[in-house]
Image (cartoon, rainbow, N blue to C red; front, side):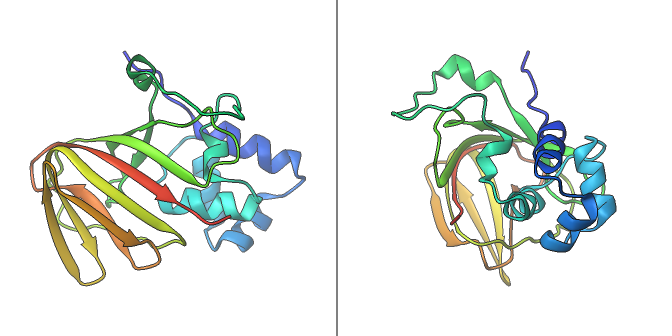
Amino acid sequence: MSSQIIVGAKIKGIRESKNLSIDEIAERSGLSVEQISSIENDVNLPSLGPLIKIARALGVRLGTFLDDNEELGPAICRAEERANSISFSNDATDARKNMDYHPLAQHKTGRHMEPFIIDIQPNEAQEFKLSAHEGEEFIYVLSGEVEIAYGKQIYTLREGDSIFYDSIIKHHVHGAAGKSAKILAVVYIPF
């Protein structure tokens, strides 16, 4: 049984500690007030793109929303610790949970990379909302089959395949139609 990391309360706490209103974060991030409010109240599962925009608007790393404590030296994540996860929607129209992100460096302070093991559940959706943000992403398929929409291209990756791309190009990662997958993803976001 995995425990969920709820990011909404953390985002709200950081915003309030900086004496910022939801309106100010909306203006800085380009997101709607309603979207930020629903994320803060854990009404909707956010996708990674909006979380990155909120982190930048707050002047914090994305990892700040995931951190338990901070480690100055190397951070080791034991296999049994990966039971903790954070869920995101994939920005599909129904915004249902279909990806579980298991952070691998949540104890490391000052990091610029965010490594995750991601479990992708089967998804029959045909339409995906592509997102773009600063940085780079590396994905290695541990098992199953995934599709990466990148710009106007679709790339299919199977176990053992990898892809490295600039995140500023609109993209979307999802399981191949009706298939589940497990991937290692490393997201680099300049701060």
